[in-house]
Length: 500
Image (tube, rainbow, N blue to C red; front, side, top):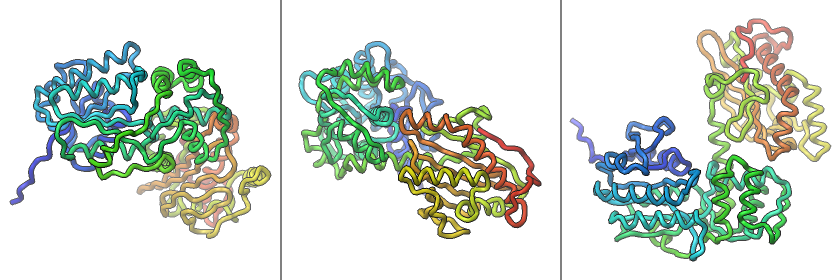
């Protein structure tokens, strides 16, 4: 007879539909914690494990908080009202007061809150409100740990996405003096480490911890480093007459999707957001990364999460309209995906895919592929003359004409990353799935445009690319079913091209 161990303490998490909260939920679940998510939109919370429950509630409604707090030991407050069309300060104040009162009534042991760095009496309304929320929570009578952070670097973080959009869309930036204001950006992974460590750290009373990465850098240095890692050249020209207010209006023209919230953030940029207290280093055994590594990890994690997408599920089964000009948008990336059905095993269907490039060629439009390689050579790229090392097996990391093999799984997956000169980053991916009746070959072209030029490149050449990729997939299907790698007619194809 087995005896189960003691049940883990219950954690209440707010903000699970936001960037930090959503990432924190994943980490807590991986640790096996019991989590109760409080949200106004239960349907928007990502898939969760059996140890997680979802409850409907709103921090602006005290009565909805009381049942959510029952039995909770630690409560995370990761709510901000910056998207509010009215006074976000009043919403933040009321939400924090309600949360504090409900936590005190329920006997919650600890509140953990993520706020913002900044010192001085003339802080922006954004920074002032975030620090006021921390004080309201601390005055509740429940032990409160407040972390204050500067820019959070991670794919999806508002401040990082704003920085990304500015760099990618503007080859020349006329910027205000605040681009030279010092900040201490921190990687999202390090923020999550601090938030999780707050569950078990031993403290007496309330505590405020200033957290930041290993480097103090200016916004200009951040933008230049992001551009450098993506191979972009950017000119940044600071001028004295662009106030934060004018900058926020300008932001609405350049990145309108972030206009409402971004303007509130920009009002905070003239203030230094650097760590002045070493208390976090004494209380936690966490060594935060530098900003270069944080940016590199954000880009790598974005690529990894995107690469894990199965297009056979995400595109064809998503109900997307077929034959849509320009493909579909997946986050910041543009995707053109199509599939074809063949009456052969996955091994046979994959055989022409693993032989692609080099002496075999690209199955369709070889002259255009060679022309593209010649043009690439003229502009200083690698050209198409590199061929491939092994005519049968593509090794991960090896060159394949002007591509490089990024992922290879025998009889299932081949993903190539482009190394030709492009206004962005590009991938070409092939997947094969099979059953008793045959196999489905899916071909996906993926493009992450850099700025307006990259977007214009994708849409301008889409008819040509679509024609080439359609022909390539049909010829691959032909080669899979015909002996001797034949490129003639298309016998035995059981379904036409399914395009999204």
